Image (cartoon, rainbow, N blue to C red; front, side):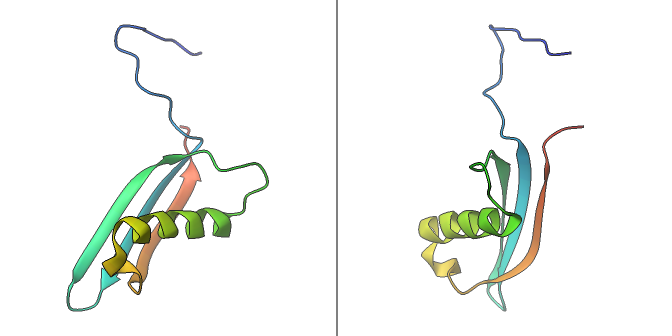
Length: 77
């Protein structure tokens, strides 16, 4: 069942929830999360590369960071 309250409705969420943590050894870690609906036919690897690319575009210092965690799950209960 879907309900909607226009007065307090939240923005739409993507079909997948993701979390990623990057680490620069000895310098720190960076974690990010969100929701996203990838284009039809996308693979898990495509989503990983797109998300990592977006993060490194915004934070160039993370370009060579190690990925220590990545999760991509359907955004439903």
